[in-house]
Length: 46
Image (cartoon, rainbow, N blue to C red; front, side, top):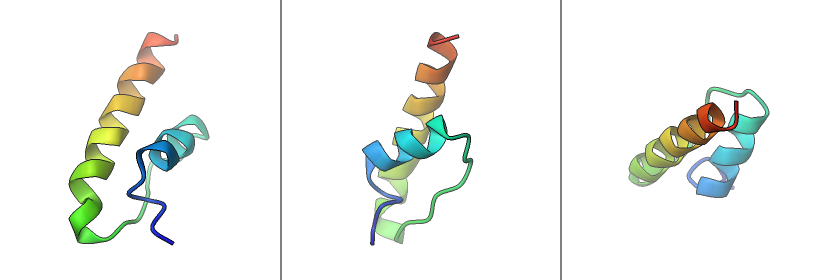
């Protein structure tokens, strides 16, 4: 499946401590944005 490009999946992977997701090339910008947002949210929660 194409879970690596889904923002919810990226957030979930980040919450598990994973630092890598795989997705198709056209979803890379979405995945990068979701990863950045998850990282910022993670800092705010501390």
